Length: 189
Image (cartoon, rainbow, N blue to C red; front, side, top):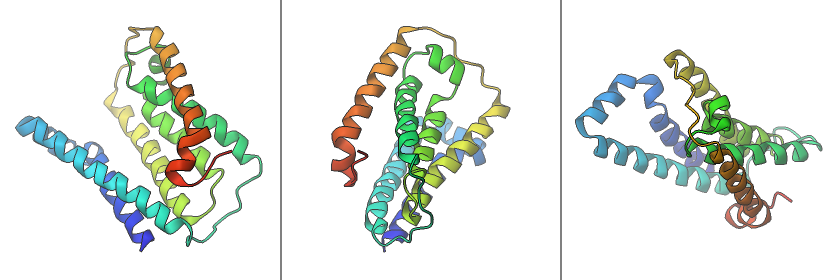
């Protein structure tokens, strides 16, 4: 049952997040017709998918077959990749600083690093489906934005970089020491 919950969650979450890539005209029409309704539907379906992903992963992880043995060194690399991801995520949502200027799409790059790090320490099918899906989606989305020719964001607040590093590091420490174990039942240390 957990496998099906996980798969349903992944399907809902990524179907909604892929609309811009595969049906940009439809998305634009929905935004033009009623932006608030579209954003509400987008948030609701995404949240439902996200909740199902977490529930499905938790339910299925104990029964999921082990597909590969994670390397012993993977844990150390994963910690560094996830720290970088935690710094990139706030950088994506702040006024542009150097990080956002050079990385251009810090949210996607952060998710790629987060997912890759988790694949280095989890070899079960549940984790492969979860983190592999996020890695594949983010990599495809990163390639899909190239033809749009988005210009690099203009740097408006170099202080944003410091704020992103501090916020990301504090959140990372909270996750490592407490939140990850409490939320997911697995302590990274």
